[in-house]
Length: 254
Image (tube, helix red, strand yellow):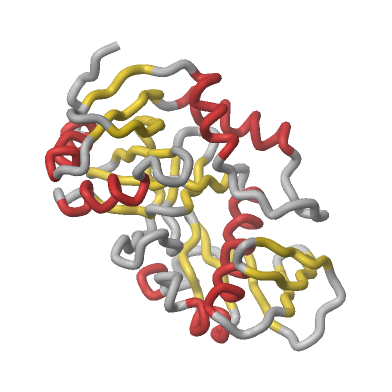
């Protein structure tokens, strides 16, 4: 199956896509390779001589050779998701970007990346914005690039928060804080970078892990290219309208 990933395509073994479907919305990311280059081909084999990658979703053995990633992985939705996340990571880092645990909301040709620790409201904000008519790119994994562009992914934290593909320029990166009203206040780049670094996708030590100094450099470049704020919001439809208005160009307090 061919899946849109940023401005290119990941061609993944069909069995990986089928078994990951309960958790990964691959169908919305199906792609035509005639229009976009294949950046990585993921092949599944019964036995692979490679590196073992282990994490909360399970483990797999991976051999990466140029444009081909060969994997040995057990059946199951979690292992399938693990492999696809690894593919997204490889492509993102090769394109010069960083894979971030965050939600991303788009309105027209501008977007917002919302980041924070578990429980801060990434999925809630995504649902509220989608309900208000904004385009949800993802509530789980965002590709961010040093020039300020971002792209969604098929990964999701909540089943009903279905992301959509597409590369969009970000207006802002926001940290999240629950409150009794909606407000945006500016934060400095180092504060924003600290939050972002804590939410970077980490595959552990391997031959293709991006060094932390490179992760930080790419994140700092991205954060320097966009506005940086703390978004205070409540669990109310008004929060979605607030974000939409901001993305349409409404000014914010310094």
